[in-house]
Length: 371
Image 1 (cartoon, one colour):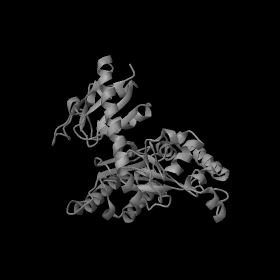
Image 2 (image 1 turned 60 degrees about the horizontal axis):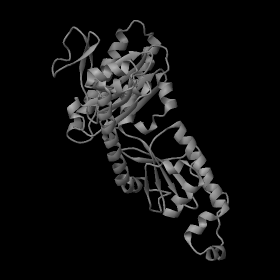
Image 3 (image 1 turned 180 degrees about the vertical axis):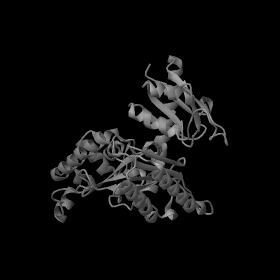
Image 4 (image 1 turned 120 degrees about the vertical axis):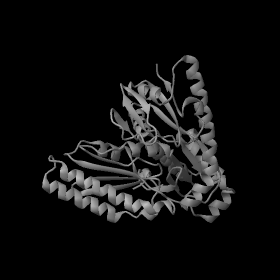
């Protein structure tokens, strides 16, 4: 599975306590040769280490240990590393395994616990900057699940939609005289109101930026039919995309999405400047981590590729340099940024990923605080 499949309901299921142990494995992967040649060997070694830890754990019954080992073997067998992205997460419990391919690198870890380790999935989902795309025409409306990586049609929650009765009378069309008249037909207006209502429900359950795609009369008709379309982040006034194809629609929409992201980055920068003036500002990993733990962060801004290995020492985070990860004394956290992002989202904070070096003056991460 990929990050677009991580819904709120599935995340809640993954976080639910389960009988000990469930196994979480994570490791970095590579998209291209020659770096990806090492991924298969690294995965087999990681699985072997997980099996060794299961065998050494006296709290794991023999029957459960055998089942988990079988699921690990099936996970390896099902995985095609030729289509790897930047990170791999494997979840295993008796009778089930899940494979997650992430567009974000993750540390190599093995965790035996009573819940799955979801922080890498949550951070990858946030970094992918998901959005919705509604492609609308007089005879069909389709909804698309978009991200930095790709676009996929969303065939649920009332989509796709079509009018109950499509007007096909040529003489009527001739009398109407032009394309905009189609959207003054009551059947079409009723259909557009249904599209607006279904779209409102999706956005309420999964809030994201919305982009509208269609000819100007279709987009205008939708905006007249309800209120949701008027809040769109951007519009692409081109027709012929209600059936995709997904890759072409993704390509055509990219400039519109990038323009919205540029404007969003400017708004975030202004908000952080205002927070500094109000003295409700935090910068640097340790300060932001503390604010997130205390539930004081309203907005967390972090650079796209910022990752840091740290040591938890006296309640504070101390950076760990290369080769120093195994040194004794204090707990080392390899995925602290992912952990922070997950905690921020859980506390109701907004998390925004910005281009590299956008926060260079603030040690790559900053926050606007509630108080």
